[in-house]
Image (tube, rainbow, N blue to C red; front, side, top):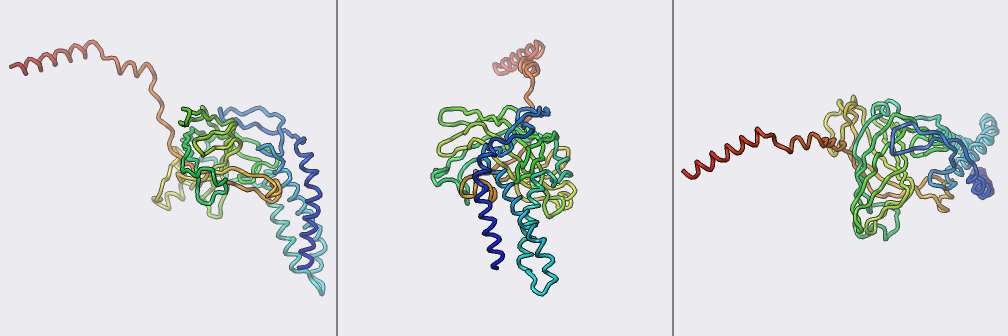
Length: 350
């Protein structure tokens, strides 16, 4: 116990020393990354972008440096602790302590580097899906949003048309830890959406998005994760959809497993063509990075914004020519209608 506490104290001392330096240098560190555009599914051009955070803070890179520090410290300690297991005074607790931290930090760093991928089998079946995603933003049980946020019970309903593209999106290092690190696929939102606020119709147009499927312990069942970047804040009464990156989390089931399970109770959306079963509702969150979690070094903190539902896309609108043709009757039908009307009026007179 004494050695473990001393090691933890040493890690905290090193991280406190490095934190200001990382915060200062991270904002100036750039690397090539792929822009993620929501308006179209065309592969975007590469450009230089800050890799520190998707929301403009240094949190993700600080977390990566903190994890690297833990992994290095644990590996250095294991080099002396493992041989001591065969001595007369083995440090069993210290060895387990360092081995656990080395495994934890190594797994997260591998995911951030894109070495650990998602469920590609389910993702391939979902690629090309067009659907309607309706956001219902408002206060939910267990949220850490401010007390005044959504206290009136108002909801902000925002329908969006989404396309889960098959094009790859490189989010850069360290990517999004809640998804599959730096590797994902493009999420397209052509045209954005709108809702009715106090001042009338409010247009909301996301500027980017990506999606992935995270594997679970049960084969054939995956976690559908995606995000959209909103350039500006949207508000309705005391409910706001904040500017920045908004995350969505749902569940999807392989069609073969879904067929074996039979009918599933609840709201379920079956993807056309692939047959992947998507549970119709999921959670909507936003990321909070501040001093309370050492700007992301101690992990990511998500605040519940509401929920969303998936459904089929709206039917295609009829062309103007066909609608005009159906609306305008022909001369033959008009004359026959007049004849039948005159016969009916003549019979009434008799």
